[in-house]
Amino acid sequence: MSTGYLWHEVFGWHDTGSGPLFPADPAIGIAPMPHLANSDTKRRMHELVAVSGLLDHLTRIEGRPATREELLRVHTPEHVDRIVAESASARGGDAGDGFSAFGRGAYEVAALGAGSAIAMTEAVVSGRVDDGYALVNPAGHHAVAGTGMGFCIFNNVAVAARHAQAELGVERVAIVDWDVHHGNGAQAIFAADPSVLTLSVHQANCFPPDSGHLHQRGEGAGHGYNLNVPLPPGCGDGAYGYLAETVLAPALAAFEPDLVIVASGFDAGAMDPLARQMVTSTGFAHLVDTVRDAAASSPQGRLVMVQEGGYSPLYVPFCGLATISALAGVHVLDDPVLPIVAAQGGADLLPHQREAVDAAAALVADLRAAAPTV
Ligand code: 3YP
Ligand code: ZN
Image (cartoon, rainbow, N blue to C red; front, side, top):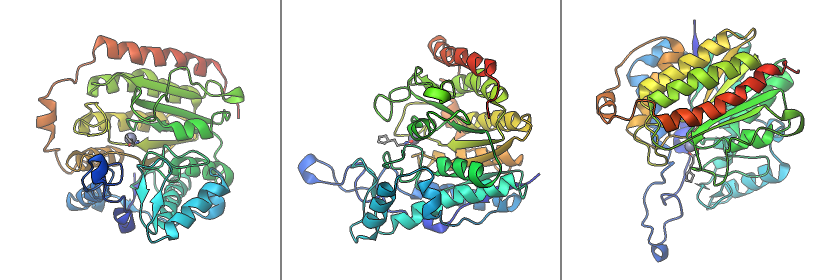
């Protein structure tokens, strides 16, 4: 068994500017400080993968920039052109919403992120490695065809999914997104496409506004192939374990994907500043076990994981280490923060959490009823 791993130092140089969300501005009371999505968190995760020794058990995969044509499978020429132009300016630009600033050269970094998702997908689908984790930056899951937003420039997982279908002989792709924010990008990009199941687990009404509702189930021929699991705040390993068993596993079993791509955020983690969930490193590892087993029991099932959000510089590295350890089946280090977050309580499944999960689980029956259509 071998697990691919990808990181490039330039991902740690993605410049998100000197305001926490908005550009710093005394007139609105925002003092300069590193952006909440600054690249240090992911750099620290990579460094823990290396320092812990886990890296020695992984197969390093090289990234490459996505070509313009590969980006255009998902994005409009206008969006790509705007990013290219703003990226070339000394002042940099913004992905599209005013709190996703980027510095000069961000196009090159983002194109390398999307191309790295492609490279890992190629390595896994070709059998060079059994599965893989692409630690890319910036994230991608909020980017839609015509714009970036929510710290995302290009939709890395969508670009990889389209590439797999166009070039690698893959038919059915499942995109499983457990970043705590809604995976609105893939939902919109693949809305009418029954060959791509998009499944997002997120904190309800967290981000984007008014997005990720249970009733958003895809459009036209794609109806039934978008599944949202909006959760109340306060969910921990119990709620996530319950949804792994009752939603993720049965949905993947019903869809029989040739390829599962996980949009892997750690912002449902117990120390995250941009959401209010309580997942621990153990909880993330359990999610990985669930999708790995589901992919393994699908006839052609392959599993690729691609980094999304996560904003605790302390806890993201340990959640990432547990995730990649679970993928590789190698334990190198106990999470030293686990006793602290475990002692906070909140791990047990509560009735209102069960209700939210059950509402989504009820929709999986429709997926089971529909024969795979591709
Ligand atoms: C964007 C602005 C406030 C919340 C933030 C969410 C970005 C993210 O991690 N998306 O997955
Ligand atoms: Zn997020």
